[in-house]
Image 1 (cartoon, rainbow, N blue to C red):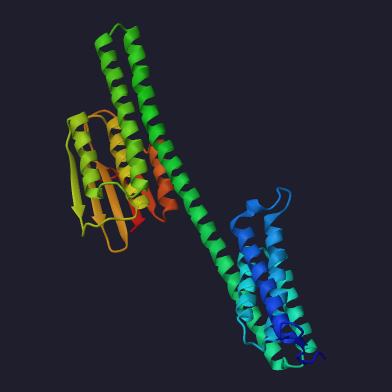
Image 2 (cartoon, rainbow, N blue to C red):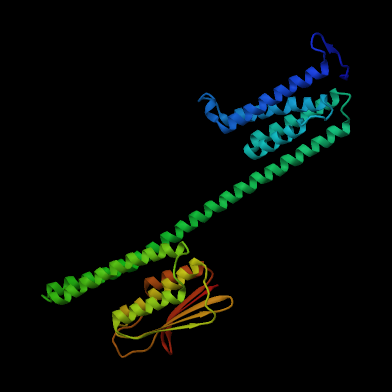
Length: 351
């Protein structure tokens, strides 16, 4: 066993123990400064050197002299705090392939020092080893928590992009298909020398393109939680229906009005747009009725096309099929079909 005999150093009046403490303190300080420098300024290293590996090696060079300093100073120095800091840094900053070897180096060095110094009680070394393991485990848990949070944030960004892409796809598909119908009609009318009616078709196609662009902007705004309240949005849809068709479109709002999650509100707005457009396309000249009900646990939208003597038969269409898929993704349902009151579209979504 290594004793604790103190011998004076000639010329300086320092004992051997004091010289060892001074040297180890200087070594720990230099290694700690280099560790922080490499972490904060990796550019100080040559380009071919791996800054992460150098940082891990420097952590080991911090731990060993710090343990020796603690043993020589009999716990009267802040060396243990440095050891704890280095072990926690290894767990937080480095993967297990590097942090576990640093932990094993710390424990093995601690065991060797405890057996080599008679002044270090075995209980002290054991307690210190347990404390280091606890600090390492907590630091690694923090690392995993940060990684999980970053993964969740990345998934949220991807989900947001997917929702935006889906909205833009639905809006453009609806707008472009309607434009094709009007432009095809204009082409046939031009062949029949009915230029005024053809011009009217072209004007409608232009309005559809303009409205499609506005809807795309509203979709992005809704996903950014910047959309108007549902009653205002549905009122605008009903007003547009009355202006374009000259037919009545009633709006009935029931229940306590409140804001819903952006994706829920957007689904309701898009379903209402698709349903009233379906009425205009398949049952021209027919009125429509829109009803929105705010319930305790769900929100319900109904769009009804009452029976009419006008020609045309309402139908589900590809747009409502897309709305049904959207409702199911949100945990809701969408029903569309003939009833005693006419053709009904009913959307239920959790709220």
